[in-house]
Length: 162
Image (cartoon, rainbow, N blue to C red; front, side):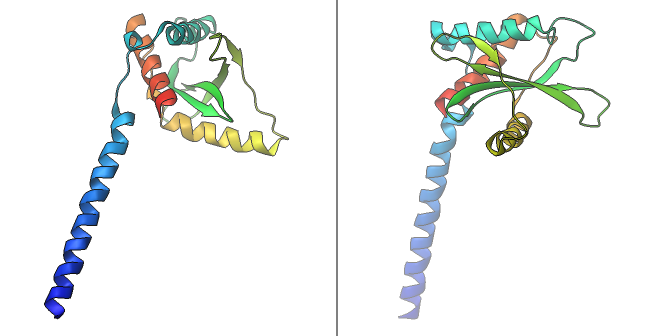
């Protein structure tokens, strides 16, 4: 009798484990997909083009004296699409600054985004921003324009399809 109970418990545990592994594997498939600029529709490409132009306007990709973007990330904050770039000061101390933009998904326009340190919700969102950037895509300022747009498109694709 005890062997039957142990066998049943073991069988059920194994089945639950296998179902859990399968579920986890299926859930991660969407996040593991890599997107390219060519995968996007025309409206999405316009968003990437505008963000790319904004990075260039601020000198974050082209000027040698500028502090280049080293990590980028698209994510949603209070149902608004946000693009953030981390600019590493170098030296290995982890210091740097960030630039944050709000994206209008209908028009593709890019505008500045700031946080009010007196607003509790903004303070929390600013903390989330730091975590989001840690998990962002590495951005190579020496890469070709096509490669840089693919990096932007990959981050964007993951944000809107997550």
